[in-house]
Length: 208
Image (cartoon, rainbow, N blue to C red; front, side, top):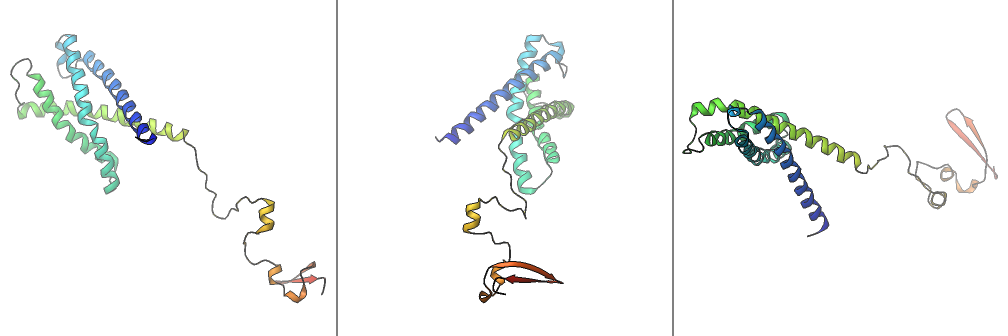
């Protein structure tokens, strides 16, 4: 594997580790808050459930970033709208998962439509909030990386490149018709004076 491939793998591993660390903090925070009626459960149970939801949510919601980027580049659609639709789609399996876990430790079965519609808005708010947080963190990270990258400066049109004196004498830059090239050969090149006459310039040489 070449160095670029190793660097990409290292960056991906580092990103996943950081993401999982953030999801662990979020899971612990949600366990302490106890949303969706889970506060009545003992804290150890809440920690297990919400850490599981956090890691499962990461697996469900994080691929949406790839989908949003591809649709944004191919269809030139606004990212805000794409993210909203992506979160809606990702919330569907997440809500079903929440409904399945609600039956534990009893028999696991799919939640009814009424239960699904009741839990969907809460899951959407939590999933959308976490997704927005990751998007903001990633944007700040990209901004920091861009600031540390070397910047290539391109000279604007019309500026002249820097040329050493030796290069200038060897091959003068072509900036339009040169005066000596427009003087007839029999007049020579020894210019002694220039005289302005209306829109013309009279050139005085040694021979004239």
